[in-house]
Image (cartoon, rainbow, N blue to C red):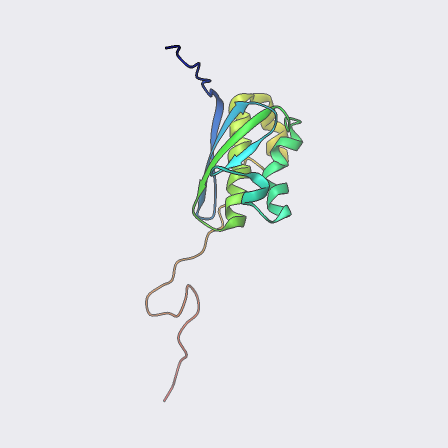
Length: 137
């Protein structure tokens, strides 16, 4: 019996991106520009073209759109938060791969984690800020 040759996928770099409650783990591999999110193609996962554009932004800025295959595991949050987390993770992975990308990505604001999250609901209130209706009598 002849042994099958297994092609080992080697990660060139990895990055973790976050936005709101979404977290994305990004792995850069050598390839021709295929982006896979949770086992599905990019356009299949994000039906909204704005989200697809947002995920590709760090690659277009650094001219590496057709240089890497990108594998992303994302969880939590909604689709917009997940797209932002993917963008942040891709930017971090590109910096881990090549430090010269940092100035371009930082200038475009892709290295900054968006800190805006939903404020928690407080007890004795209807929401985070909204109070129950006050009745004098």
